[in-house]
Amino acid sequence: MWIRNLSKGGGLIMTYRCTAACAHCLYKSSPNRESAYMEERVLRKLLRKAVSLGCRSFHIGGGEPFLDPDALVRVIRVIREEGVGIDYLETNGFWYQDPDSAALLLERILDAGCHTLMVSLCPFHIPFVPLYKVEGAMAAAQRVGMEYFLWQEQYYRELSDLDNRKTHSLEELSERFGPNYIIQAAARFGLWVNGRALQTLNPYLEHKTATEIIETNPVGCQELTRTGHFHLDLYGNYVPPGCVGFALDHRCLGEELSEQYPLYRLLVEEGIRGLYEHAQKHHGFTPRPDGYVSKCDLCYSIRKALMDGMIGLEGTIPYPELGPLEFYRLD
Image (cartoon, rainbow, N blue to C red; front, side, top):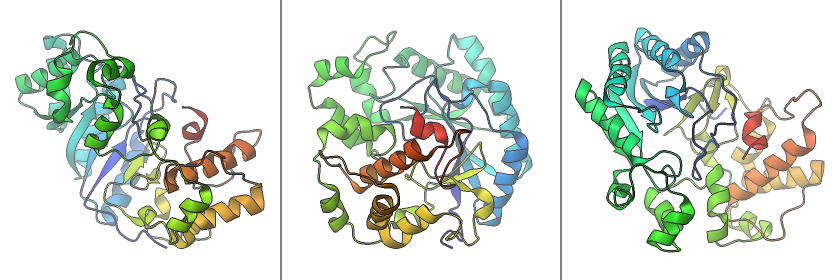
């Protein structure tokens, strides 16, 4: 057993569906993901388990939480009823249409018990959400007396030089700011190079063979046991910080995990070498000839190969710690 306690704050994934498919998204959220949203009964179980292990507050995210405003309001009320704090509510601001309707929506959020709004802005969001919507969402928050902040504000000056009524592709940004803009912007962001960011940044980063990566990462992956920025999702899963594509049943937190989750155990105890040798021995895994940018890249490639080769006719997942299924099936 490796997860005995949780950090004081975590995140709640209301839905994996989003109006955007951002190139840096850790969870590969997009309009193609399932439209399911966090249910009250699941939420109460998650909150009570988290509180029992030391968590006292959550931020609310996704996907895009504002895709179902009524459900979002219910979620906020349940969180407050359970005596749990809300740090902030994430959004890309897609819902902004005009000042009055935006203010009415945020008044509902504020009245339900959420007092801080985080609005996303960066080069990876602006291909999907024009700046005027981001600015409008912040103005609406100010109008109703709601605290707010921009994530990440460091990009505002350069992106505000563009037409704020339009979206702007990554190609357009590279033409405007230089061919290295995307990799430089990612470095400034401090991205976890995982999820969709692996695909986006792969061409810019140095590749090494699987053997080289294994030799330079000889110990277990302790990242899987850290809880500094954990999430709980709408399916009742615990998602380790940054280690996307793993989904541990929240009911197992604080309990023995080694037998139930064999791949998770291999990675914690033996690291990427253990997973690699297991995949070769039992599933005939063959590494990519062009190599990988990191152990996370190799790890994801192995897990994806296992999922692609072993999904049953009814869509069953061969290893219970891997999920959600859409994470492996959709880009």
